[in-house]
Length: 390
Image (cartoon, rainbow, N blue to C red; front, side, top):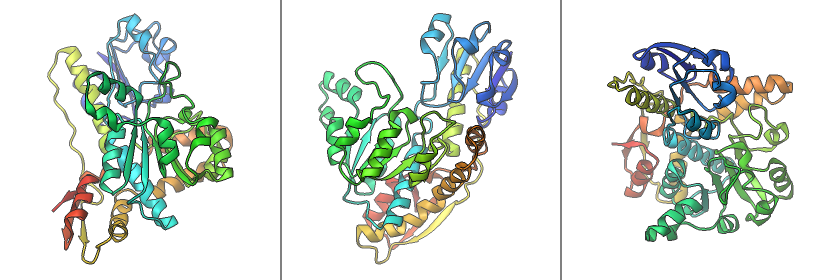
């Protein structure tokens, strides 16, 4: 059995070689000739999966090791009768870690306290739910916006539906708006340019805006105009319109810039490989034997003395170096800024290289915090962020 995998899927050879002969190739370089003789295909989001890739092939099963599906022509796969799977939730905790690190980096630089601010989470699926947990743990008031989820809960008579608010309320009230929606361009819940000029005009002045969803969810020109007029005070951009190309004018203005790696913590990528491996084994009717043993984390433990930290501001001052040591988001920003001045064609290649050669980053839950003299509130914050507290 011939198996073709994106080489950026950790443990791909170890896992799938149990099922057949494995070939690894960069995802954006996988083409029709590569797929023609393959039986199983496994990729990440950089491979567009549809007729241009699969016509003339004998693919029996396709697996996407990421949460999004906008790179997959699902109707085409269904017409061809090709079973497929994705990996919903595989990197949800990784993205939540990214949002937390970004906010600690901004709050430290700009001198504000996170607790007490209002955050609007747009898109409350696997990722958004984790982001809500992190933000609530840090003492932020959280507004949830997800029309499909609200409708589903309301139709079931679930009172939880009332926890979800309209986008207009998020835009008007939130000090921080963070986006976690899939990219769709049709239907009543389309998210293409969800934040357009009209939406930016409704934002609370001085807002912090974060896009760790998909680039086209934001209208880049409208975002730049809102940065010019002060409506948006700070922005964090992980996803870019047109990537791997990206707008250098936005890259120059954003506070934090990264190459679509919010979900690239090692656990998230391994979870993605594991999810499609299990699905492939189920499809083939074989027992999964998973070779996913993670290496020790770079920061295995952290000593934290909570003595004297009686305020939200003091607690955040203790948490900030911990969070930013486990995930040095500033280093990701610097690497991205290093490619901003390259010629356009080289920038796109460098963007992909930053993703494919991304250094190992571990989730917060890989680090044990040895807490002494800590209050119950501080311990709850640490656990809410995923740290193991002893």
